Image 1 (cartoon, helix red, strand yellow):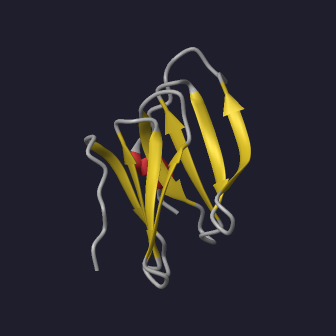
Image 2: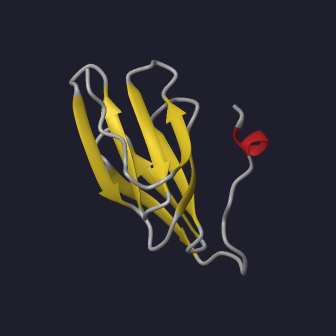
Length: 103
């Protein structure tokens, strides 16, 4: 199995609790992922600036990414579509601390 990693430095990795999906947030504006069962790779632009953190919801239905563009995106994992956008919700960039995302 080959997983094509982004060329930009990796900022965050999230693995689904069922171990079927791996998500990678990199210094670029995108999130990459790999579906282990289907051996499928996806790459999607999710933000206007560096993606700082990516996490999965406890039920693995959504992944949430935050960016230095001051936004948070909620993506539906089933169809890889944007479910909700929190845009410019505060003055500083959204960074995300690891201890805040433990479920």
